[in-house]
Amino acid sequence: GDSVTQTEGQVALSEEDFLTIHCNYSASGYPALFWYVQYPGEGPQFLFRASRDKEKGSSRGFEATYDKGTTSFHLRKASVQESDSAVYYCALALTNSAGNKLTFGIGTRVLVRP
Amino acid sequence: EAAVTQSPRNKVAVTGGKVTLSCNQTNNHNNMYWYRQDTGHGLRLIHYSYGAGSTEKGDIPDGYKASRPSQENFSLILELATPSQTSVYFCASGGGASAETLYFGSGTRLTVL
Image (cartoon, rainbow over all chains, first blue to last red; front, side):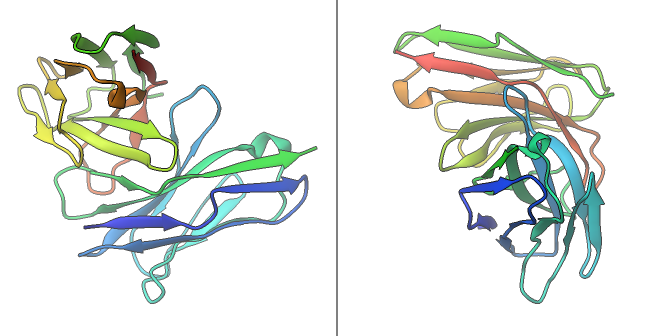
């Protein structure tokens, strides 16, 4: 079945550090790829998406580029702030479905120290 | 701003009891989803719906039923709760377009003793 792999379970950083969270996917078709962010006590919220090869998604200083060749959608931010502490989820959905049955990775907890 | 409201926020149930988790959305979205969140598993899809009167099985439907009596409401039902169903449950809605954005509620923390 379709799946998403996030290799980092937890990342600890200091403010202004560079953040990378690795996301690789396996899918039977040509999926749309997403990043969602979840702050403590809240539900996940959409960060951005990309729907085709080489497309870059971005929001709030975060970005990721859809790479069909390496089946990856790695999340990056050049300079993190304490407010970026959250859990980040990579997800995929097959674009020809009637709805978005999102398949999520296990999430990466990011802790940014002041 | 999309609004998805879940109730209750916290629930303690006994093994073998019936539990109903409720979700209401005011976005007039066609699609609604129930996920559970567990450490080491991320978010997993239990049931979903494409509109009033419809329910579909997700990836882990065993032990759960769903009901969509109206566009706005989507319930998750545990007829015979078990401790393995202790988790945080999230409801979400989406407009039904390809690569739609999902809007999540704040979750229900369920503990089954």
